Image (cartoon, rainbow, N blue to C red; front, side, top):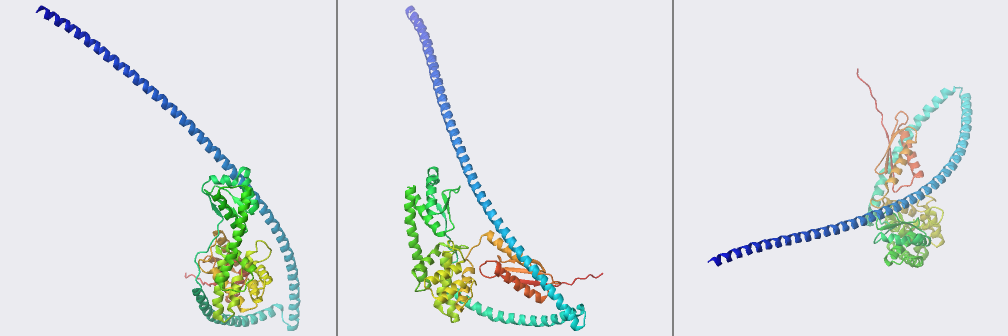
Length: 507
């Protein structure tokens, strides 16, 4: 009994000691794990700080590279702008010289006119003195009598004749012309939107611009020298622009640059080879286009050189209208009008097809396109009647046949119909301002307004200075001056408005 009790006490003491030791071991274990966790967190924090520092360095390097690229781009822009300003200064100097020469010529002409006016005034005074001596009347009395009689007779006769002629011509001419033009337009179906040649070459990426330029500009200089064009590399994304006054060279350069971009091999030797190949391809296309135009227009017996020159019009546009399509359309319209009027259909067709032949060569030679085309056609055996049509469709020479007038009308219909041509805003505003300036330059005009996109000009005159007969003459004078000084498609209607108002007040 006593042994059992002693054993229990000993076992209890050992249990207490074992529990204490076990608890101490567990506490040390937990402390050790806490230290390891803390060390792991410190290592992770250090690694994260290192990654953040590396990312910040990379970002700073990228920002610096972008800034350097932007500075280089700005320098290139400033250099191009300086070149443009230099060219503009040279053009302004040339214009100033021309204006000075023109002013000197005008001064000489004005001196001659003043001298002639003085002579006329002297002769007029001598004539008045002679009349006064013969009639035994004072100068004032003779003047009043003569002016009154002449004015009375002239006003009555001229107003009656002018109104009668205008009424008859308007009634018969408008009806007949309306029928002919309507029939011709209905029988010749044409596209509404004109074809436009482009000079923009798309690129797969902006990196290709650097390859086109080459080291120190070697590639782009070689391309411009061989092709005879200007290659404009600006900020337009994934595109470069080819500029040249000659549409054939521009088309050859455009095709060649597209081939070089597609091939990827861009160096001076390969550039010259590609340009020669594309020159041959374009010449082949020109010949095919000319043959197709001759077939579409139904004109036979033309010299191969004439057909080839005609095909060059495929790459020439006027106000957005393709000139080869315009030539074929004019030939068809002229054929319809000639058939309706009983004229020579074959001559009208040939004249309509070839009337703008000179536009294919006026970039390379001096002279108007009508005279250049007529001379070229004459050298290659074209019929003399057709040569006269080509030369006279802008009245630079006298028209010798009714077919010439028919081709002129067909040319105007093709160029003035809706959808045939497009005009830039600057050209439109310039034409409108020129119309109003011409109208306002005449005496007695109070106001003028250009309407219908410059197709009509309305002029308000001062009734105390311009009478009914004078308003008719003013309309004709303004229309004649517009024809002599301006270029425009179709026709421009001139309307002179004279209004008399009587105002009084009841008091």
